[in-house]
Amino acid sequence: MFRHQKELQFEVKVDRPDPMLARQVQEVLGGQFGEMTVMMQYLFQGFNCRGEEKYKDMLMDIGTEEIGHVEMLCSLISQLLDNASPEDQAEAAKDPVTASIMGGINPQHLLVSGLGGLPTNSNGVPWNGSYIVASGNLLADMRSNLHAESQGRLQVARLYHMTNDEGVRKTFRKMLARDRYHQYQWMAAIEELESKNGVVVPASFPPEAEEEAQEEAYKFWDLSEGEASSEGLWATGSAPDGTGHFEYVANPVAKGQIPNPKIPATEVHHDLDFKK
Picture 1 (spheres, rainbow, N blue to C red):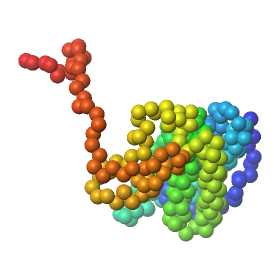
Picture 2 (picture 1 turned 30 degrees about the horizontal axis):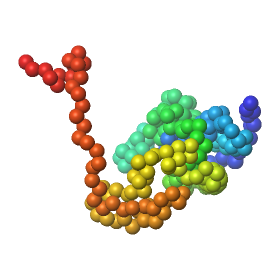
Picture 3 (picture 1 turned 120 degrees about the horizontal axis):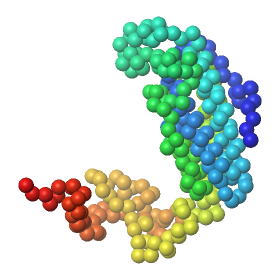
Picture 4 (picture 1 turned 180 degrees about the vertical axis):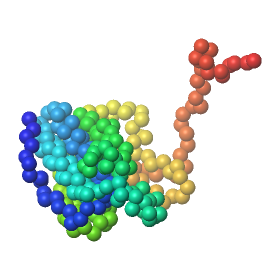
């Protein structure tokens, strides 16, 4: 059960309207790594979580918090759009640089949402459910969550430097702090899960089950010009789980055969064996 509380998680109060910034903020609302994505990702992971109750509880806690972040951003966008009008868009378009980069005010803020936030990114592309990851494997999902929070915080940090509005920046600072904590949170969960089952996903398919292919799990193939990649930890030393030692292969060679697929039936109309 969910219950809505009228107060926002943190205060959202802009110093002045800025319709073009509202368009930019849409990216961290409805973009690939926006708040809508992490909200749905954590909630679906929580809804489908099986096993230890603490993981489900944690996922539902953070997923519900992200609902609040979506509401905060919608409030921020609405305030940035206060008193916006079609005339504002025409005025912005007078500056060729602004017009070419921003295209003026997002017309959908005027035509579709009535000066409110939209489930789209900064270019008006609708949010897509394929952005979310909810695989049912806790370690795989937690790593995806760390990635999502890393990308999301990066985008908010970039937005922070795109405005001098102290009210907007105050909101962004709160989001940056929470996203920093969320990265800590996923790192802690990942460390705990790795200590239980190892660092490779899925743990239920162990290295020994790879049989004759095991040796391929430790070789770094240099397939680009230069040898700078040989200097990384991925090319020397031991694997993180201690099951083997990395080997740098400077000139890897193909180990498979040349494919020779059969020509399919003529009824497939591939024209491969067709002659006039």
